[in-house]
Length: 164
Length: 314
Image 1 (cartoon, rainbow over the protein chains, first blue to last red):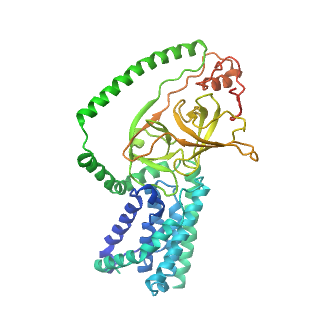
Image 2: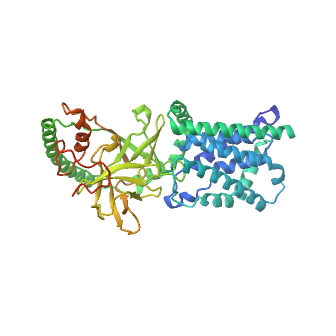
Image 3: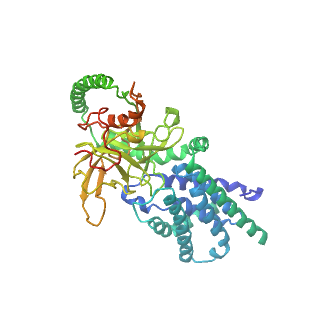
């Protein structure tokens, strides 16, 4: 996450995308849709880890997750841990995944989202929030379906901002 | 390149250990309260933006869609207010009488509860848990574990406190349990959340326990957490399975959950200790006084009610 002269002028776009993702994560939906809300923050995190792997990874994942814990009033550290793992994985496979066509990329995203959902669900059940109201994979599926569109939008805005 | 990757692996391990430590501390104690307060200020803008759409649509609905006839509304509220005041007058007389009788029995007296009006904020919290946000925080004196009611009954309790906002766990969350008694006969039991919205369960009731579909369950005040005597749930279904040692009882909460609705944060009134009750009998008489709707004398005969779910009421 170091910024060195040349690329530092577009950093606002990173802040804006993360903030918008957090807002979208906490906007109220009709109750029936709640289980299918895509996890915007994880998607945005994955994007930045793939696009700029030399800047985004474990640390930024952890930080984003920690702020999300504060936003969602959840157990502190729960999202921080899962997002750190997601950030790590996305960062590690970034150079390979970036070569993939979009639909293959989506499969990797599906996997990452599933890892995230599993970790969060595991912590929640340990903390006593046992039975869930809705299928845990709902958010994973919608997130995956959304990925191609989100990827194109984010790539466009990154290029416009001149961030490398 | 290799060094970088190893670095990332070590960072991951370190951060995972840090996260687990933080989670355990946060789960076991409230020593992270200050951090949470500071954090709540930091994320306030995000919540404000997130609730804006609901706020705006409410405003539009109020202004343009739902054309309220204020004359009629005023007349209606006025009528209702008169009605309630008349009833309150009678209740006040009953309360004074109740206090006097309790003093005669040297049973514990109960101050009335303090309440503060709060509003449900349209912000979605942790997915897969039954939580809502209210627009009061530590600035208004909200504390962790505080009971939250709505006009119909018990809604839940405050589980995380921010500076201006607090998260309330609904009684339907699977981490929640409320001690209750059946209004009809005083039978004591505990209502557990199931994690599914609108569904509660009452486990560990003997098969011969006197509980029926439609019974109202009111908070019993046992455990000292929730104030006594507020409606909690209504029994929706009682199933008897001969293979099971206990009844299968499910219930639905009476509190309604709509965003933009008012809820009440309660500071329960202190229970005075009984004046000169013998020390040995004290525990029993404390139990007895909680027996609001029952026929037993509160302090006299020690009630045989130790175990929840016994059929002591018959």
